[in-house]
Length: 263
Image (cartoon, rainbow, N blue to C red):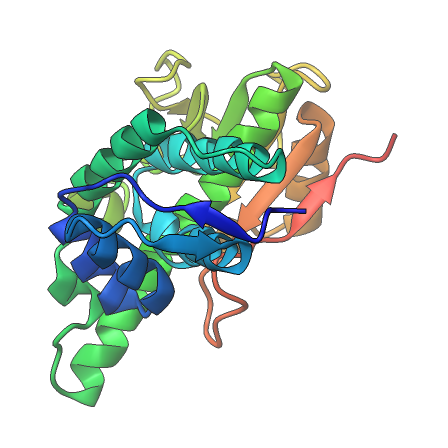
């Protein structure tokens, strides 16, 4: 159990974070950051801290770059352990944590969140863009964490290849795995973290059984004629499979079905 009252946040210059928190509706976390930025650390209860971190993890971290989301989520784990042990949170780590949040928040243009976007059509388009953008990233964060827990690489299937689709041409390939592959990539391209090699998700015979700690397939299986065969191949090469499909009507925010391999 957390103690009843705890010392508050380290002072932070976190204006970008506060603006983002308010934009996505993370009111409690925004209030705590505002108090900290004003030099008033407050005395927050266990419920305050739990709400603060839960709001950030659900509403904000999915918008950040995957590597930043992983780091910030891991730091929340540290804070929770410190609080559960009845001690103070590490204010040096908290200060660095707040600065990292603000750096990530500065990369997100608030109009892309629909704030303030006028018109139903524009708001719908902004909401869909946010869903596609954020959903893939939150599932990628979970896949990376699963692979790291097992001490194995992450396979990212359907990473996109520049020129293969409008989204990839605009934003580039999603280089989230230790191996990134796509059916549109050249067959002679090398497989590593900085490139996209060729693969057909229905035939991953170039990879060994259970070679990967996790496999990620984001927003691509709906285009595969034989989805059952594709999922079977993903299960064969990875200990755990993470899928993210962005289809209307949208499923629960930030979730993708996880398909663990049968023992």
